[in-house]
Length: 355
Image 1: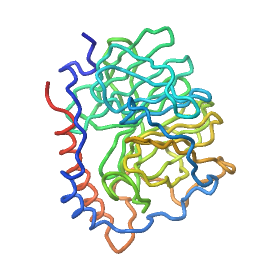
Image 2 (image 1 turned 30 degrees about the vertical axis):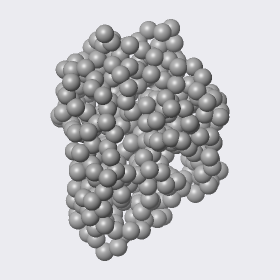
Image 3 (image 1 turned 90 degrees about the vertical axis):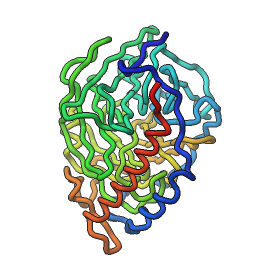
């Protein structure tokens, strides 16, 4: 029997949210949100037009949630499964090697490649916000594994983004319906079988941008769905369903980097974009999402990334939400929260059921 990443129960089969179930309530709520860009001046000038790198058609990757570069190859993982599994993709998105571990994850959402070759899977999804612990699962190059459980200092959170600093320190970024995401870091080194408490080290605030895409309408502009750190340690990226945000990184001070202003990159419209990675050149962005075929889109850096910054930095509070179209920020935030809450509740009921 494989070890479970959630100590309370083994993993039950996943059930994807049916669009028809959510259509009516979401349509009514999203119609109240404004149109247009909330911060048009912060669009990234140093990034060019997106292009298709390749398409994933392999039936083993129907719910792509995590992506990382490994030289000219890519590492990909599903949002689901009853064991830890990473598929290695070539430049044409064809699956080659498959790496697995007999660990039964609860809800894996992101992955990262460490400098020592360990692949870290972030088993941190918690739509219902009911997990006592989340987990990081390491697949070492020698075939051994490590599983460390983590606890939040302020109760359960849903999260889908992992940032792995160059020194190997992991940071989890929560997925919040009002756009006020928190960043958490373990208080001690990861160790197999250990349960390590975390501390909040940074706060981020995402605004309504007007970029279309995602399964939850405009609320998706506020929800963090993936993260990446470039292999050379020079940049951090986070994405929502609709936009990417890029920060310069110095050393391994992820929290300090996130306190500065990012470059915002509007992404091509996608039904459920959850994965982001830096390409092998450590500058271009690679993004993808769930569904088959899954298009891996490359957004190439065309200028000096260190000198680019938005007109306004992100704020560390939901009250900073900027809107357009005559809707007050608080109203827009509450509607966005209602939309996402409905989806989270229904999705949680359908996607995770007690064993």
